Length: 158
Image (cartoon, rainbow, N blue to C red; front, top):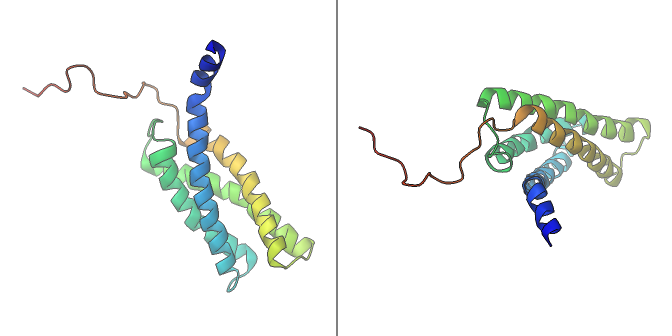
């Protein structure tokens, strides 16, 4: 039992962080896939992926900044936003490559192949995003973030 408790305490913050990241990612995935299929009715597959990703990435930034990684140090909205979108641009390449390969190399133009290619690209991109967000965007706090106010509360100014 003591081993289980120590193991839980050691990995609880990682498990909670991954659960939040996964929740935001699941909603962003639904946004991305829905918009991708809608845009693909009017635009080409690669342009559709680009626009769907821009919109879903904006949602993901807000969710990850203010929920998933809120316990991490904030290093400036401009810096984080720039890095977040830069790294998502790199992750977008996974989706563009898988969709492009499926559509133009394998010559598969049916919706099922299109969506499977998207899922593979999103999966590969997600692995890269989680690692890169922790490493470069949402940095570890240098000072512990207090969970509650110190004993006695906040003293009034003089």
